[in-house]
Image (cartoon, rainbow, N blue to C red; front, side):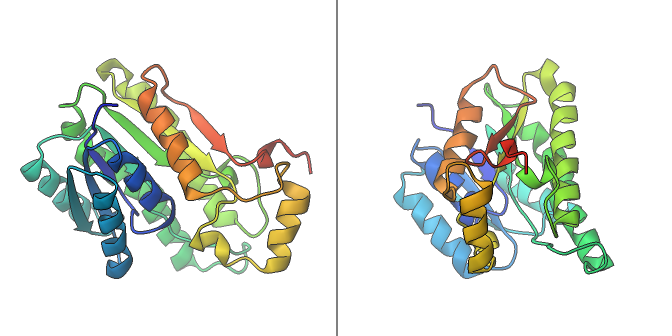
Length: 248
């Protein structure tokens, strides 16, 4: 397969790390963004190198900051001069009911998930225009498709990101820049590791028809499937073991 130059936000762990490793197996150049956990980001970078990346660029920055994002895009431009794939994967866990979640957490959720994707797409668009196969992949969630308990902020921002994906797909189609989203269900990551064992077992028994969690690697496979098929744009690909088809 064709090597790709890829930029992934929130790539220090979980889904972002899995996308980096899977992309590296094709021999391309991979830029990994992280915000705080330098040690985890370093591990992700090393795994990406071991997987076969032609080059690995580690970029610290807060996607909620336009200045940080422009700095990262400028560094990619100076080193590589182009991008084929941009993956907006940076996230912020914000569980809680309406009366529990703070205003600060609500604002941060929008800043990372929605404003962050806005910043990244706008800053990297000139680099994507230099590619023959440009594509943007956003990490949504089943929480943005159907209501989930104690997820009012997270579900709201993921719904906004899904709509952002569809609008941007229309906007960039004439330039042959495709925009899609993958929507994971319950995936074996740190985010879901915080669930109680009782909640996990309830999900597996009653909410997921396949009765198992997904893995970050399965989401990475879905991301690359959306990258490879150049006749898919504006698609919201659900990868959830059947969770969203449950009536109750």
